[in-house]
Image (cartoon, rainbow, N blue to C red; front, side):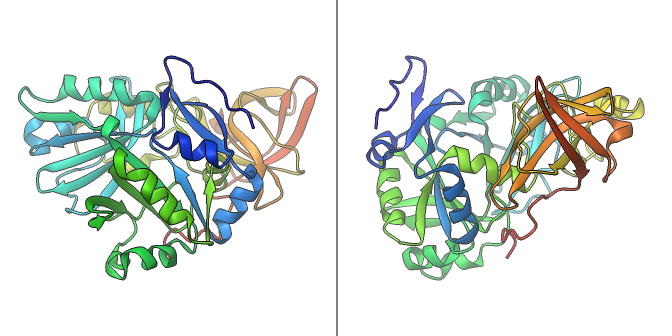
Length: 369
């Protein structure tokens, strides 16, 4: 099949040749040329739910920071308490602007007592680094290691059994949202028990020089098949995980997005005052999940109605391969956020009946098993 020629300003994944060899459909994503699908989004999605899928996520950014977060200013940058984290743990968090809007959603790793790694989104990596550098105190050791760090994601209920063949029993002690350092292909790699699919899974951080070898090693196992970013998107939507740039951004706060549990209001951080002020005034819109009454799929930016009244808009929408119906997320006026509220999703000639529901849509995920 033909592959698109990268634009000059696009970055190429270190696995570009491997994706071409596997016949992947490639497309720009977050400033990178990345695999969207191989055999097909639905088949890759269902394989991840039942076995193990391997995803290239080298486009994600990694930033390392050294020092006491209360002394170097890092504690003020993130919405969770860093000094309470244990070495070997990781935590989902936000970076907010002065207005309480979301600059990015991140995962912070405590590598050592005073060594940290921040995993950020591809499209915001450069801006995130600039924001962190601006707010850290002078002299703090800060390094953007994105260009020399590769990242793979093995997800699915059989992922633990697959890794046992390669790593033995050592990695099995990893709890949910913890990580360890392991000898892998002659170098030290970080492996965390995290993911973005709702299934049991592990993420690998290693060098660009070794990532192709690991990719091919994992794909030798018949229980593993490659998954593209298309399936990754439907998988994350089924469990209600937000996508930065669609479901969350600077226009909305974590509280509006229903993610207030990742904001520690007992500490100070950039944007806290504005966040509390916006909460006290009652947010105009809230992020909700909804499920359609048919197989028809809502799409990004479709309008949401209650009767003849426009009440919001869709941020993410897709056909759910696991549930065989349409699902979506979107912002609606807060008086319509209750579970069971009937809505209509519209765009030009398209009109889809739906009902607001709680997340996750898919409730059989193995992430914590």
